[in-house]
Length: 247
Ligand code: NDP
Image (cartoon, rainbow, N blue to C red):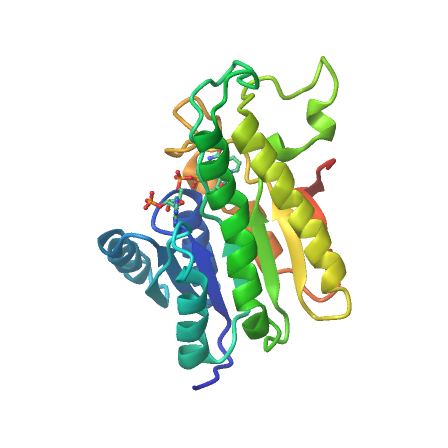
């Protein structure tokens, strides 16, 4: 085991989309980025892109659907660096395609379970496995990629501002993730670790779709801000860029 002064960030689902863009910007700050990806070739390609942009980047296999993956990641990070400074729980899935419709009466159990496995269960499991390493950091930061679609407040009236995507599985998985953020922040209140939920914006990615107004190149801001908060920064919050969102 070796320890390093350089800050180390592990980002899940960092081979494309918001995760890769976030990795680029953390890399530009001199932070070592460990690209978590489930596909070796895609992970290697992302690392090559990051290195070409001048970032210090490596690939580490991570698959949210594999129960052993968190322990394997933890063991490798412990052996290589002896600590972790930033965990960005970015990997996520949206299986529902009924954008613009409320699928509550028809959504099937497989969609609910698969979505919760990737967007909630896996995040809890990985975070638990990596907490001992984050506790070795001077300033551990955990960012959970939630969504404004996880906000109960913004869904709770008939004239809700959220009327574009009513996929029960995805939205409820992000609400559950937000509750994890709150619980974890309470559990870690006497530590140096800060944990927050992020809504990156509605972004033109494979998940966000072509109609999204935000380009990938602008999608990193919320994650990077929360990953690099100073000691006076918030914990147990829910943000888009620097704006708090209602739970
Ligand atoms: P993308 O679909 O572009 O990328 C998703 C990433 O997650 C990919 O790297 C994908 O890997 C990875 N992933 C999916 N399943 C697994 C798994 N089982 N194990 C490991 N990695 C996995 O999504 P975005 O970049 O748009 O989204 C990133 C996060 O931001 C998600 O959590 C999403 O819910 C959230 N978000 C996105 C918004 C948007 O408008 N795009 C809005 C609000 C929140 P692979 O390439 O192998 O499939």
